[in-house]
Length: 304
Image 1: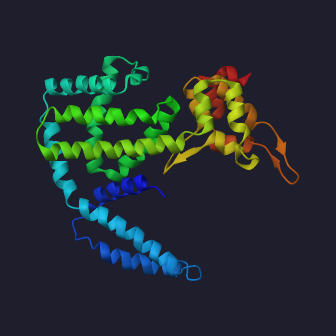
Image 2: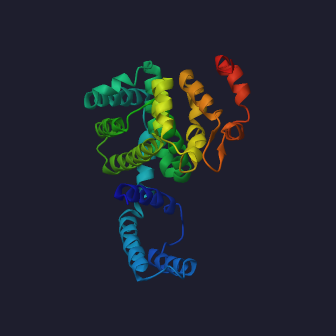
Image 3: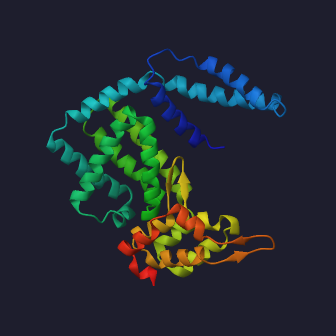
């Protein structure tokens, strides 16, 4: 159980429900869902399950009731605030964000080595995402989960998301005194950060960490503990929600060819126990039917 995950899901649910124009009866949902659960598991369902469900929904309902009705006004305030920015205000936010972020987390400079143009683009994208989160919460959850998986490949520590969020929130606070605007930006960006941290945490497998080292020995050590039956998918697929990433393709894309070579060799190694042979070739080409073309274009040295 995770109270942080429950809060995250409730925040997203509030944004989704805010798009509904009809009245929402949360108490009716409790009764309908309870009856559904009873019918789905008639043999296993007992009073303990009923108490657990009621306790869970009471907490969810309490969180939702505290937020319902607020997203629309927050969205209007944030949209109006950002739409009114001049180029000077936008530039102030960009510079102030990184000034505050690097002051809170000096180690962040090791991961933001791009040009100022690129850093400013990222700052602008953060602002856009805060508005898009209000407008299309379901779509944004999927996009942010995918972004989180890419952050795993880039080796970004999840500890940096907090200072980055704080720097952005403090920058906006210095630009406006409107409580609704500040609350809207803080709520949206904090939710984005929660989803990113969860995606990075769930996607940070030993294999993905080994890719960042680009050492064959590290990759062999990372995959050595995987069960034979799951070994291939550890190298071919990591999922967070509905989003997935292939460690093999990521290693090729990021230039970690030593790691990619170790993965391909491992997938093409035949293993066996007393009953079954294990061979990752079929899984590899099922997951990536265009693997040979990709290798020819981006990593021809792995073909030899």
